[in-house]
Amino acid sequence: MTKLPTEQEVRGLSLTGYLHCLRGIVWREALRFLQQRERFIAALVRPLVWLFIFAAGFRSVLGVSIIPPYETYVLYEVYVTPGLVAMIQLFNGMQSSLSMVYDREMGNMRTLLVSPFPRWFLLTSKLMAGVAVSLLQVAVFLAITWFWEVEPPLWGYLTVIPALILSGLMLGALGMLLSSGIKQLENFAGIMNFVIFPMFFASSALYPLWRMKETSPLLYEICLLNPFTYVVELIRFALYGQLNLEALAIVAGFTILFLGGAIFAYNPSKGLIARRGGPGGK
Amino acid sequence: MTLSPAVPQDETAPEEVTAPGHQSTLRALEVAGLTHSFGPNKALDEVSFSIAPSRFCVLLGLNGAGKTTLFSLITRLYSNTSGAIRVYGHDVRRSPGEALQRLGVVFQQRTLDLDLSVMQNLLYHAALHGFTPREARERAEAQLERVKLADRAKEKARRLSGGQMRRVEIARALLHDPKLLLLDEPTVGLDIDSRRDIVERTTALCQDDKLAVLWATHLIDEVTPAKQVVVLHHGKVVADGTHDAVLAATGATDIAAAFASLTQAKSEAPSLEGAGA
Image 1 (cartoon, each protein chain N blue to C red):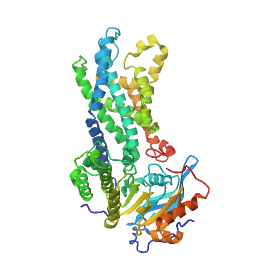
Image 2: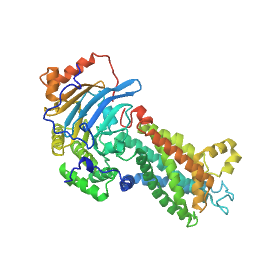
Image 3: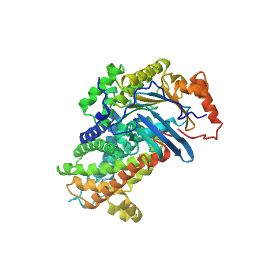
Image 4: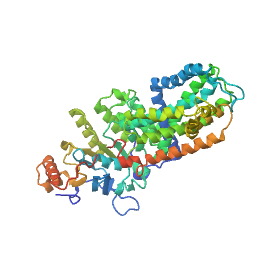
């Protein structure tokens, strides 16, 4: 049996303690993910359906001219792949927020928040856990697309990793911010309609922006204002070993904004929780 | 009739601890002048009471009396805007990490992750307190042994009965050797045997581990003579003292009658309906 510490023996929060805490949060998220096979399959099937069916159908309709980072004409499948990678992360980010609402309803959120580590650290760790899961999904997706003639340079698979971490953080932080405002699990359907679909369609994920400009200048402007466009472009360039500085700056900026907002919303004295008396409260 | 805070504490209470460099005696939990509102509703109104180390305190109140709000504030789910909450002298607002390290909590809701095994649930909690995997496993095994569930360690939490889940939650709350254990309506939804089991276990813990316990309940029979009683009604403390002192002050013959007289007397006061969670 473990010995009880005296008052003097209660230990402080060491740096290794922080690392163990982060490890524990990522480990739990990974365990949950691996146990939910349907979630893994759904996360893969969604972009693959787009790639195999939608992209194949649009191949002949949509010609893609030579635009950076591509150096030659590319097949539509090649063009759309970075957009689908971003879609995986978008869904994953929102799914993490769904799991936070679930955690809140189930009370798991409360066990997280009584950890003695600072709340910003707990929330950021939770985000990192979501990003780790999204990296796993993207790796499997990119491996499959390789056999579908989407063959970026090999080093592109390395250079895309930091881009994916940053974009995963941005989309996860957005999900976390939204989760603080969702009262019940049922309201999550609204997120699908009002966040995921508009973000995905009004971006450069499916069509190059110059094409959008020809069709609708207004939609083009909307796409330019959509942070998801820059997520897609950051990933697209990184997958070809290039850095799109504009996309990097914008994605980094929105990451800070969303994360700051989420930490504020979960702040015990200032945020939404304090005003509303949730989570787990009334 | 308000007894708080004049009712004397039990004279046989265990010796209080004095912190190095502190003049006053150190309380396991000290709630002072705590008021909290949700919009126009006052959930807690000038709540003050304290628990000595190694004391078992029953926080008695009807549903909606403000017990859950009080727990949420002590566990810093949200911060108190007025008054102070101190855990072994550490202010929950100013040094939450220090306070939370000394605090073990069993929430009213079931908070085990049902898809994970019993052991995985405990290891996760230990990681949240910064323990190494090895240390976490040792502590988890020791605590499971203690609640007689060592043989169920590998089972998914959803396969446990309600009483067993509560025992795992208590084991989890004790993993990091807290010095104050909070339990929010821990026996709700349990059958009679499981209820008695949880009450007896926690009482034994309080004695064996020199652990202070704050036990919120609306079930009057969970108040026994050796315990401190704090009665919360419409967000106010209407009695605070030993079982016998509360009986003496109300002139009642048993705690149920004392509780009835305290809460009925207060109900005639200006209404605070809707306050509290």
